[in-house]
Image 1 (cartoon, rainbow, N blue to C red):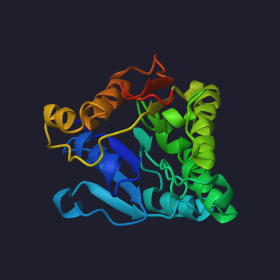
Image 2 (tube, one colour; image 1 turned 180 degrees about the vertical axis):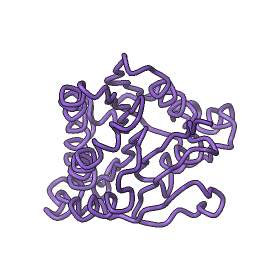
Image 3 (cartoon, one colour; image 1 turned 135 degrees about the vertical axis):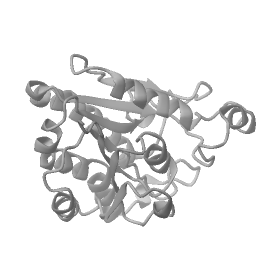
Length: 242
């Protein structure tokens, strides 16, 4: 009998959206390689998840660890869900002048450099899939004319958009789809088990329910290798920053 399981490589699985992606997208037959610096608190409930500890602020070392663990395993879905921002980011206290050089470098390494190096390292793994997809979790901070002040964070999210356009040209021959979801403010404080209606009620409809993000990713993974969903931008309806 043919084994039809899918293999996921998901980054940022310890909490928030990454946790939801890990618990929601794969079936019980699928294999998940979950990457984070801190260990998720739900591993004992999900035996098909292989957790890999990696510090993405150190790209070369992190990718070496990942490659050693995953080796030549097929990867169907590469999902880079990583996005750290500056101290006091998205608050009235944010002050670009006060951000240290080391913090800026760490943000760029974590959000962007590690992503590029990981993709380069796993192209052969993706080529083993019948319909491989690379999906970046971007941000509306990477869209033109946003009103955010977070310089390093914004730079990395704009950078991811550049990566997906160029990657498509490099990976077209292998039929590897490359996509980015430019997301607005998410209701990450609610577990995925909370009904969407309750999330909308408790947030006054100002935050995007995580179920909407799951639906968008499932759309991308459901498309054939003849299609390439390059970008989906999903700001919150009430977001005035764009």
